[in-house]
Amino acid sequence: METDVAPVAKGRPREFCTDAALAAALRVFWSKGYEGASLTELTAAMGITRPSLYAAFGNKEELFRKALDLYEAEKLDYVGNALAEPTARAVAEHFMRGALENQTRKSEPHGCLGVIGSMACGAEAESIRDEVLARGAFAKRKLVERMQQARTEGDLPAHIDPEAITSYLFAVLQGMAVQAGAGATREELEQLVETALLVWPSR
Image 1 (tube, rainbow, N blue to C red):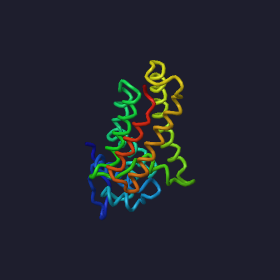
Image 2 (cartoon, rainbow, N blue to C red):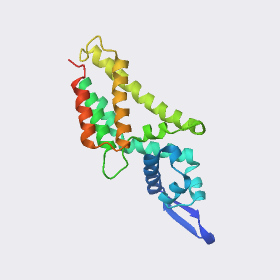
Image 3 (cartoon, helix red, strand yellow):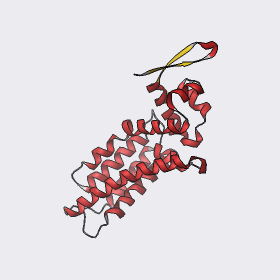
């Protein structure tokens, strides 16, 4: 783990683990969104001063981007695994069950950082919203490609539009994130997943 040394009161150096500090910042952003997370809350959770935050991570915007990188690396590994599933239905199921697990862990904030982070962004945080949307668009393109492959292979009916079915799945995933963040139970979200699978158009 990398360790930074930052000045504190009376000129004494203060050591802190950047990995632990970033993980703490991630939890704050995940709970409150980008704009809802104040610098006071962030520095308190991270156990560092504002000068130390700026020195180690840049400004709040850069800190959020680093937290988003960490979130994708540690919490969204199910995305790549889902795309490798052998059928379109299995892809969709893996996506939804992976999201369900990620968004309802008792030890972590509920909901999706990307959805929570972008929903509450005003004009002053437009670059953050654009960043989150761009990352989501990349994942969506990958899923469209996978659905196109499924249709070519006959796994999806010929009349199913890969972009439309992908948009449907993303709407379900985003709805799950919003509901999880609003307090929906795991059981309630599991019912949503089961219903979505019942109407999935695979042969």
